[in-house]
Amino acid sequence: MEARPPKLLDQLSAAILSKHYSRRTEKAYRGWVRRYILFHRKRHPVQMGAEEVGRFLSHLALVLRVSPSTQNQALSAILFLYREVLHVELPRIESVRAKTRRRLPVVLTRDEIQKVIGQLDGVAQMQAMLLYGAGLRLLECLCLRVKDVDFERRQITVRAGKGGKDRVTMLPEAVFESLKRHLRTVLRQHQKDLADGCGWVELPLAYARKNPSAGRSWGWQWVFPATRIYKERATGERRRHHLHETVLQRRMSEAVRLAGIIKPASCHTLRHSFATHLLENGYDIRTIQELLGHSDLSTTMIYTHVLNRGPAAVRSPADLLPPFPPFPPLPPSDQDE
Image (cartoon, rainbow, N blue to C red; front, side):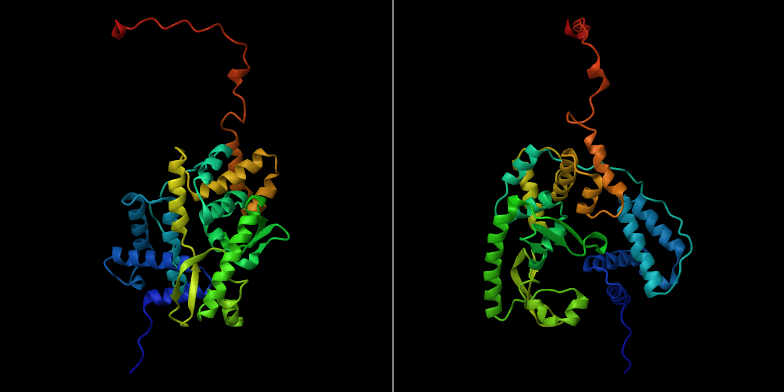
């Protein structure tokens, strides 16, 4: 009996992993391809083309009203399927595009930052301090390995950040001692896991093939490991993953509420505040670009627009005029009588 060929979504996963894309990209692309197929009543993509792709993208924009970035992600997933799995080059795709809106980031003042972080404690407070004090993205913080925190040089190395890039940022003094104490606790937990036959951690695919035993080494452990152990089906290894992002997201949302902040602040707001406060302190925009890991300076320049708002920025020309006499009181209206 001949073996059945792998299913389309499995072929898609294999192609994604062969390109060394992240697991999150694999999950997102599989989801979009599945929705594309279901939208066209389970027709096989090889039987469809640019017209069907355009109708699906228009549906996302007009009916579901998704954001431009979501629509672009769906298009990228479908184009990857046709190009890398089906080996079909699609012609120009005509569709309604989701309207792009340029949004200024939400930024907290230093006083608001102190109030919010003050509502947190323990590991959550430490993570929030790293987001604000080092300009980390949420997953960059959660995916930190022990070997990437350099206490002697007071720096953190971010591995495979957005766009697969590495960068170096500062280790804030404000979190220095508490992070050291936290890692001593994590080390004791790891030693106990080793004694129990566990202690494995997920490694980058290429390095896992090259040095599989590194999965139990201390340097490769997560700085913020999960509380539970899971069994990896492919290898049988009993591992710990890093803490899930929703843990800090929920704590942050509650902290903002308790602090009485009415701005729609999130974990990423701490990174926006990091960049804005550095600009207010007079640091060079290129330095901030490097610390944030932005490829394009225009992405970093958006924080200069934030600086032009509020009492600490440009003075209104009306405030430079000589004072006028007090405005006379308004005459009473008919409704007041």
